[in-house]
Amino acid sequence: MKNPVYWVVLAGISIAFIQQGLPVRSQGESQSDNKQMDNITIRQGETLFLSCSQGDFVTHTAWLNRSSILYAGEDKWSVDPRVSLVTLNQDEFTIKIEDVDLTDEGQYICAVQTSSRPRTTSVHIIVQVPPKILNLSKDLVVNEGSNVILMCLANGKPEPAIGWSMLSPSDDSLSSDSEILEIPFISRNRAGVYECTAANEIAVDTQTVELTVNYPPSVSDGRDVGVTLGQRGVLQCEADAVPEADFEWYRDDRRIFNGFDGIEIEDAGAFSKLTFFNVSEADYGNYTCVAINKLGSANTSIILYGKFQWLLVSILISGFSFICF
Image (tube, rainbow, N blue to C red; front, side):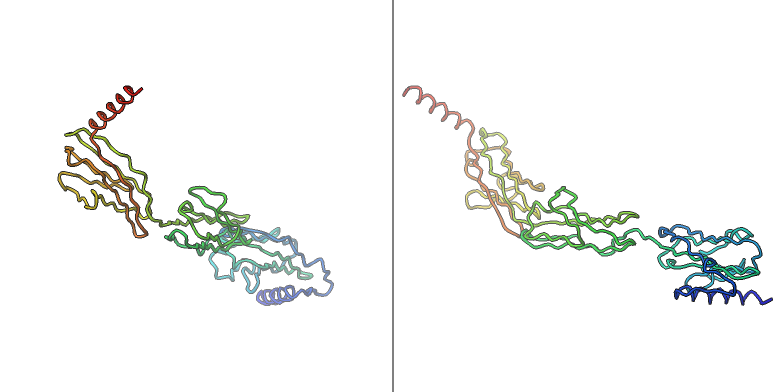
C-alpha cells in the first residue's frame, strides 16, 4: 500500500483537473463520483464549516483549497491558525476556518480514497464584505457663491450603493445617488452636515462632512430708544454673518470705544450693546452700529432720544390737532 503522501498528492492532482473543468476518473469511476455542492455564502469575520461524508472503506481523506492542502486526515498541513479540525470519523470529515476574509473565497475540495476508487466533493465559497467608506471629503469652509463638490468612495461585496443627503438641517432637495454631490453657487442656507451612505445587503456604513459657508454681515434694522435724563439707556445691534462679525459704534463720524465718557460696549456673538449708565442731554442723537467680517460690512442707525421730550411733543401735537378740529 502506498504511503499517505501519495494519496494527498493524488488528491492535489485531482483538484487541478477539476479546476480546469476536466472530469477525473479512475477505472470504473462514474461522473457522479465527483459531486459539486451548492455555493456557500458567508460574511466576512464569521466562521466557515466545511463538511463532507466519508462512508465505509475510506483509506485516506483530505480537504484542499485552491492551491494547498488544509488537512490530510487528522494531520494539519495548513499553517493558518484559523484552520482547525472539528470532526473526523466514519460518517463525516469537518474542518472550520475562523474569521473568514475575502482571501478565503474560492473552491474547496474534499478528496476521499476508498478501497475501490477515489471521489471528490467540491464547494465554492463566496465571502460577503460589509461596506466601508475609504475616502471621504474633509470638512469644508467655502465662501458663498462657490462651487462645491463632495466625494465619497467605498468598497464592499456585493458592491455597495453610495448616496449623499443633507442631514442637518434636513433638505431632501440636496441629495445624490452617486459618489459625487455637486452644489453649484452654494448659498448660506446650504451650510450644514452632509451624510454619505454606503449600503449593500450586508450592512450600512455612514460618515458625515460639515460644510461651512462664509458670507458678509447683514444687520437687523436698529430700534430707536427713548430714555429719560439720568436713566440707563441701551442701544442694541444684531448681525448675521459667518465668520461672526466684529462691531464698531459711531456717534456721527466719531468712533466710540469702550469706556468712552462712561459708555460700555459689550459684544456677545451676533449681538452688540452700547450702554449709557446715566443719560445726559449731550448723549441724545444718532448712533451707527457697523458689523464687519473679512467678506464685507453692514450698518444700521439708531436714535437715542429724550423720552419725556417726545412725550411732551406728542401731547402738544395732539392738543393742537384738537383745537384745530
